Amino acid sequence: MGMTITEKILARAGGVSKVSPGDVAVVDVETSCLLDLSFLPEGWRKVLKVADPSKVVIIFDHLVPAPTVQAAECMKTGRAFAKEFGIERLHDVGANQGISHAVIADKAYALPGTVLVNADSHTCSAGAFNCAARGVGGPDMLYAVTTGKAWFRVGETIRYDLTGALRPGVSAKDIFLTIAGKWGAHVNQNIEYGGSGIHGMSLNARRTLTTMGTELSAEFVIFEPDDTLIEYVQARNPKPFFPTMPDQDAVYKERRAVDLGTIEPLVALPDTVVNNSVGISEVAGRKIDQAFIGACCNGTLDDLAVAARVVQGRKVAAGTRFIVTPSTEAIHRAAIQAGYVQTLMDAGAIVTTATCGACVGGHMGVLGPDEVCITASTRNFKGRMGDPSARIYMASPATVAASALAGQIAGAGEFFQGDVS
Image (tube, rainbow, N blue to C red; front, side):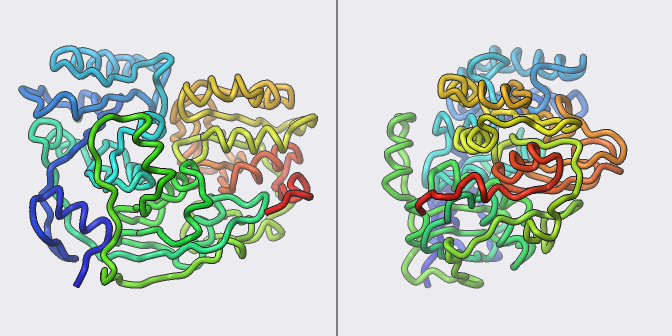
């Protein structure tokens, strides 16, 4: 019997002919990514060697620019580590900085057919690049950096066959909320996306889906490769890579069909995204204090373009804070050049530097007691963005922007009327 995409990549990286669910795969890691928080004193250990500095990336993202002395100390340690071992791919505070998963996407550090590990739970984001990418904890991260190896228990795979195309005003975040609402958690399982529908999806849209796979408790989340992906990677990264398709007789735990043309805009109710999606009409009118667009999943140039379209010539409601955080400074600059930042700011939004920031409740948008936020970020857990009494709804950037204008949860359909799908 044949292998899925993830299984084939793990087998190649492990130097074996086949892996199956239940196996433990010991693999060569092509890319290891450390973050600012990797260098916290309680988790960091003195490293005596680095297996291959050219395969290590350091990206400061969670607390940038440093809002505390501890954050500044983490980055100081990281800079010294990069200098000691000659790690050239250091993305320090400045023009080349951003949220790790988005920088990895901008630079095509995630190579198709290879393995990538990162010290952050949303590492499966890089699966949009046909890369077997997984977040790992501190000890496994140090192991990968010093030995070039990692190990994973191989899980079963759920295959999603996407067909058709999204209607105007509907986004990849709505696809995720549909899957999360209908099929729930995918604990210890891999997710594989394919089908004719993926070819009409931008890489940004695909990355929203893979990034959000973490919220389904999935292990690896991966897309089939296509010409769009291959051309993108070739233009940005000279290293060899191995586009990987599933075997025709690949064994899946289940195959599920999703017609993108049937997807509706949805909202996840507070505290969880699993089995918690509702139509906008069920929550429309609920007052909000803050609207947020950003994070590794929805701070792309596409997302900022949608937000700017919705607020063009309009004003954010009085008493509502609208915070927009581009995923990388490269995206930030592109959004300035395209006029999106001016449009957002004219409407009353604040556009911040690239950071995890409000998404992790770190800075630049922390919620106070009993406040209500609608967010196009990765998580709506209790206490995620600030005080545990705050209520966090999750939706697409279009819905969040429309809600910012209304000062209450609202749909964005009127802003896309007349578009042709």
